[in-house]
Length: 114
Image (cartoon, rainbow, N blue to C red):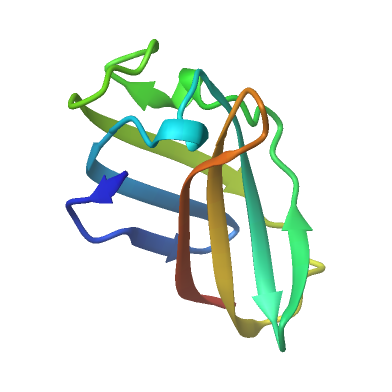
């Protein structure tokens, strides 16, 4: 999958990650029906998970599923970041998986939790 635009990350009580204009392409063994998204923070090489109420990809992609090879999509998701997380610079890994659990897209961006 190719990212055609810069990923925007805003950090407050809620974290919004928005990747506009993402082309979905068949990636052979990693392609397939969209499944769930996972979000991890990474600090000092140690990953920690952020919980999502509804991790399913299809509810957050436009145009809606099923995804078609060569088509352009917008994925938009908002997650709650608990106030007990410390203020820290970290890397966020956002992974979109197919129904087999294989990664279709994996993006890492530097963030500041404040």
